[in-house]
Figure 1 (cartoon, chains in turn red, brown):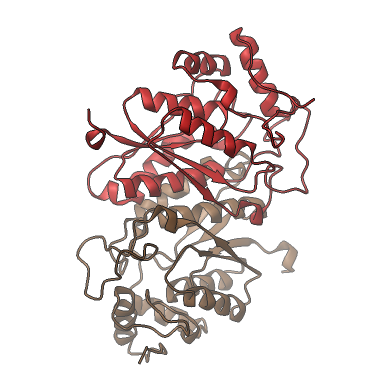
Figure 2 (cartoon, each protein chain N blue to C red; figure 1 turned 30 degrees about the horizontal axis):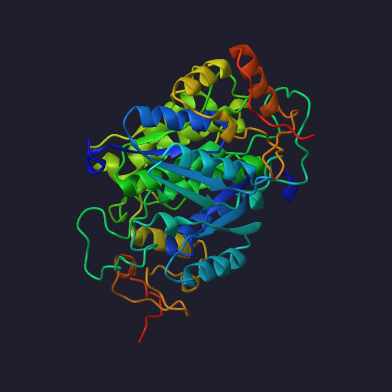
Length: 228
Length: 228
């Protein structure tokens, strides 16, 4: 199929393992992939550099980065420097939860999809290893899709917007196996909440622990480089 | 009731007539009002100055302005300088429609509400004079509310988030009468899509026409100052 007749999809790309795998899924379903990342007051820029490497390595059709003011609203260890990133496992919803983050990210994806006349959005949420975030649950995604179809010209004009969540029922080990089968180099990705400028992981935060356990469960060597 | 025990609400405040009236409604229901405005690549800053005047005049508890990159995504006459603002009435969805705008704005309101532990969000959408925007319809707002209650800690912890739309069934004339009864000085507000730096209106865009017709229908003199 020529590029002009291929379906377009917007892919939320963080630079982590899950969103890279999600991009690979969209690519293998034949979409022209428009990757969207956010600079939202993260403590480090390693994640965004990883997103750029992943988008380039996986031949995304386009990659845009939007700057957001989430830090102005505060409320999360990931955007508010007055809250420490925890190094022991969390109970309930962790302080690394960013209020309404996926809702905000999906809303920009929806805007871009409408402009591109794309009917498909991919997001790498996961209900199994979801760290207690409410906006990673299947019911939430379904409700978002219903809303999205009422929100836009797409809905009015008889198209249908679909929110794809190819990882939602997979364990971290399953995600890693899926991505490797699609040829992903996970050495390009950064999962750590507290990575340094070179993208080296702390090995202690929730995200590092979940990633390491996933590789261990899959019986595969993790290419993550840790801080000394 | 002391300030610490009053209910909090987040109010989307554009600086226009509708959102000023919505703020007045929230105030008269006894909420501490947290007003939220966006700088999103509008062609003029008159709207934001109006929002600041309105928030101050109406004693909003707090007023924050978030800067958004909507222009990067393009697609609307209000954010893309390559598309002209029309001066004749539109058929269907007008080019001044900003893709997914209310969805994006409500998502930041939701984030702030969650941080403030507020259960209430007010938005001045209107299904009568809604200029053909899909994200002003009652079905859309209901679907957003369902999604919002699944998206956040609020939903998980047994509170219930409510999206209030006090203007949704009112004509522009009704809105003006309601606001005047609540003491609003509509001279502080700017509705025009192409206002100049002094906030003077063009008198020709959709928004100017709808506003002027509303004051005429209500039999009230419009305090709008027009460009020479």
